[in-house]
Amino acid sequence: MVTTLSLPEYSEEYKQQQHQQVLEAEVVHEWECILRTNFKSYSSFIVAGMVSATWGLFYFLSPDISALYLWAISMVIMIPLSYFLFDVDYDYKGQITTKGIIVQKTERVPDIFYKATRGMAYIGIVVCVIAALMVGPLAFVGAGAFALLSFKMTGFHKQPQVLVYPFMESFTYRNTCSELDDIYQWDIYTFMCDIPSFDDQKLYNLYWFGFQCKASDFPHIEKVLKQYIRFAD
Image (cartoon, rainbow, N blue to C red):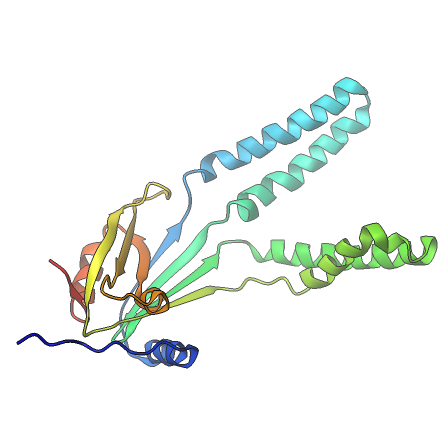
C-alpha cells in the first residue's frame, strides 16, 4: 500500500510559523567558520594599481606635485576600504535545531569603519546645507542624491544577516551540492539540499537549505542532520 503525503498550503503566515518554530527550538549542534574569498588576496593590489595608474596619468598630463600628495591620500583611503568593505569577510555561524537550521553571517569589519562612514555622512549633510545657503536651492540639483544618501548613512551599523531553514521531516531530501567550495579560502565545504517532489516553487524555496562549514566539521554535521531529516540514497 502506497501512502501519499499531503502537501501543506503555502502562505506568508505559514512561512512565518515555520521560521518561528526553528528559532524557538532547542539547538542540538552549532559550528563556526570564516568566509573569505580567494579573490581577497589580490583585491588590494588591484585597487592600488588602479589608483596609481589614475594619478600617474594625471601627473603625466599635468606635472604637479599635488598629484603625488593626492595619490598618497587616495592609497591610504582606498586600500583599507577595498580590504574591509569591497570584498568583505564574514563570521559565519550555523546552528541545527530540532526543527531546522539557523545561519548567521556577520561582516568582519572593524567598528571604526562604520564610525568613519557615519562621520563622513554628517559632514556630507553639513556641506549640502552650506551649499544650499550659499548658492541657493539649485545646489541640490547635483547634491540632492548625496544629501539623501548621507542621511541614510548616518544609521550605518554592523548588522548580522540571519537565514532560517525549516525541516520537512515527512519528506525525503535530495543532496544537490556537497563539495569543497573553491570560491573560499581555508577548505570551506558547501552543502545544499532540496525536496524534488515539491512542484510549488514557493514551498520548494521554503524547504530548500544550504550552508557552509569547515571541511573537517562536515562529517559530524551530516551525522546530526540525519537524525532529523531523511536523505535519498
